[in-house]
Length: 206
Image 1 (cartoon, helix red, strand yellow):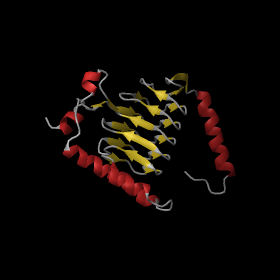
Image 2: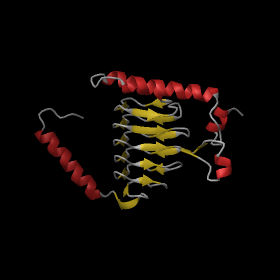
Image 3: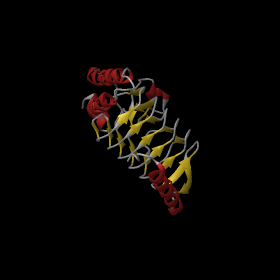
């Protein structure tokens, strides 16, 4: 198997020339993205489409942004990444629709051998990260290798997510843990705020 095939199959691999070409391509797209002007929203959205394996309509990244491969990441529609996020996408990163990342969110889909005798050879061990639909991850959160976050969940700022988090909860902390479920009271409160917005805004945006 090639190193790329080992990577895609979740096995120990070591970057060879072919993988480094993919890495350099991603770094080049990130460099262009990070040099765009704040008025170039359409260009940024086009670069997201070029960078990732697939990106849904309306996906947008605020520079600066950094990733290892790009081609190992898929994002759904209306994905939003705030300033200074990092994707170590040696393993697959799969993100659903309407996901929001706060500033400095880091997704680490790669691990290294715990055994030092093996680690000395500098192999990578890819572990996927999966994030469901309608997830909001607060700023400066780290999502560790192999983690899945369920639909509609909110992760509090500064969390370190070491284990799977279920759908429909608020979770936070280091290590990240479930704080409470998202409730009907949350729905009522926020829909009321939206009604007020519709009522008082001169030109509501949806």
